[in-house]
Length: 136
Image (cartoon, rainbow, N blue to C red; front, side):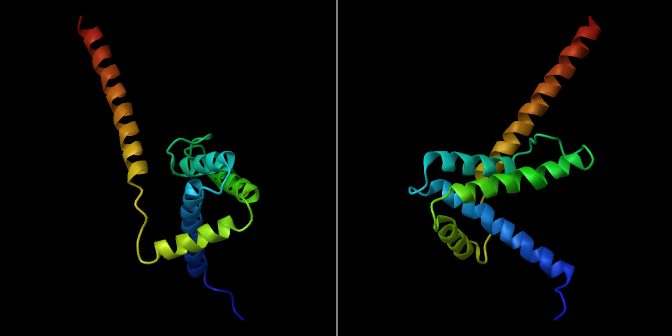
């Protein structure tokens, strides 16, 4: 048996990551899950979608290595702390809900846009205040 082409393996890996990300979101809303596991699951999802990293991505190798280590580690810890069978149920539900549609991440998108607008406003304010200081 020949190994699957890289493109197919990559596509399958991306599909599993999307499913598991959405499953973690579902874990966060499950009433059977203890509060501390929900908090950790919420943190893992927020960290994965956050534009802010422990090590910025522009730092060669370490920036991307950060995402490749921290996020899977958080997911592994959440899965290990979950009561038995809940992650499997959430994965199945995520699989059903993701068939043929993309999850709407409106809240995350709005948060990122608001943060970037705030940064741009602060930068503009600083530039204008320093320009006004030079004119005097």
